Image 1 (cartoon, rainbow, N blue to C red):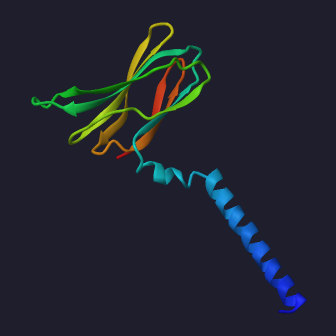
Image 2 (cartoon, one colour; image 1 turned 90 degrees about the vertical axis):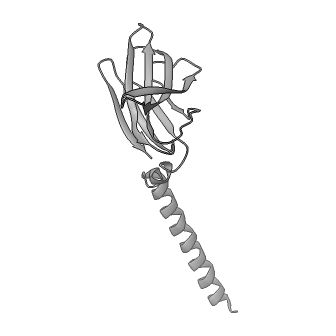
Length: 146
């Protein structure tokens, strides 16, 4: 192999490596991988934008009871630490489900105000994710669960 051919081969390899690196970095920066998150065990990201700490965070499963009324299934999980104002945390609650149901979030702030919110309106497999933003006046949810 001549020096000219070797130089050409090395140049092509460098261009390929740089190209692959750019593609991978752009995928990571975009939300292209969030598609895969819906197949993982359920997670909830809580962004506490309120002026208060969240002193209690409970996630649990709701199911339809015998009378067609929504009831707690008994499967619930408590987050073990306070979520400070301005903090963003990700929780993977330890929940179980047989059949179908939904997932709720019950949060209590440092003023004693309690809010209940559905964070996954329907699931059969406790997979996917929800993003929750807590402000002083509202709790908003974006869910992508299965």
